Image 1: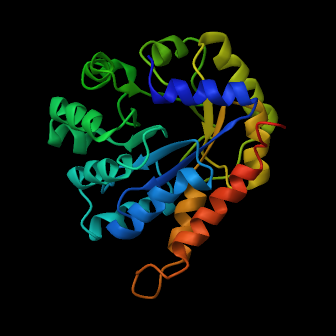
Image 2: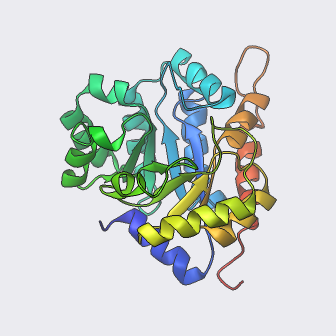
Length: 275
């Protein structure tokens, strides 16, 4: 499937470096701060952006992203508000791929056909829905692909060779390899384990492979960037938001610079087009 995601990974390949995928939760800690963060990510070095759709029961997420969802919901976040935020951001950035990540319940409630139509109109390039297995492809995956919306699948350390073909059959855009067993924000995986897993995935698919869960430091991102097509950082950035809230849960003046500064630091570990 063509589009921004394919174009970005082709550009990264031409540059000879791994990409940086950043995750933030839409509306966290408030709509204005969230939009300011989103607008600064690309300039700070994010090659692709994952935006979490706030949900009250994010079962695959660790404490940091769970807390971010609750903050966003308390500040009025909804799926329509998330799509509106993407629309406002996309007006100033027509190049950076945008992936919505989350759970099926809000989309089901919104209406699948309506969601696909509105997401594409807003400028969304792909979705990652963590609780829709291949057996449920008819729910969202196949209608999304037919409409031109990439459906990005997760592969995990427990996805064996017998299961992989089903996982990859209708995957588009890239494959997201979950480097650890468990929830987001947990301990980092071993580089050798990641390298073996990425090599195995590459034997089954020509799609780019992005690696996430457990990546926090520039050193970890740099190491993964040499192994995979991209490294994904989420919990560390979301925790930085939490660390820059005042006692009433409001954003301190330094929140946006702190988060974008960390994105620059992460990006610096991935090298440049020259080296």
